[in-house]
Amino acid sequence: MKLVAEKCFEPLREWYGKPIRVNSFFRSRELNAKVRGSASSEHCVGSAIDMDAGSREENKKLFNWCKENLKFNQLIWEYGNSNGPDWVHISYNASKNKNQILIVK
Image (cartoon, rainbow, N blue to C red; front, side, top):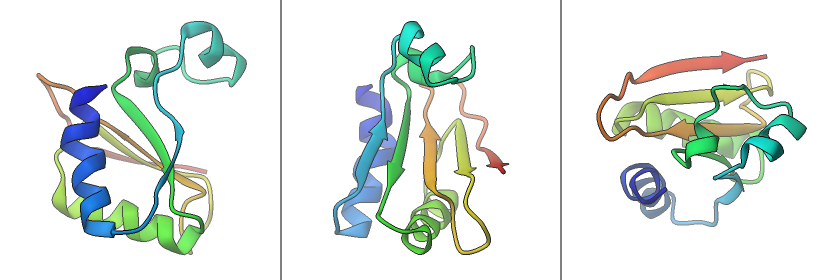
């Protein structure tokens, strides 16, 4: 949890300079099943954060900044539309970051 916060969330928060709501961070397997998360969700090991800046347009800014400025395992545009995602998922892995970008519709 410290690594994804240190390597991804904190640099993003410093750049953005406004509040960013964390919707999900660590999730137990039981909670992950209840919210219908992926069985292999990185939330279950504390290496993923779902965040929201208050609007799709602001979330799009977060997504694009992360894409251009951070190393990450996965960056996911979660739902939304062309104006922006409903929220942004980012994960970080200490040993192998794929810099994989996904869009979930």
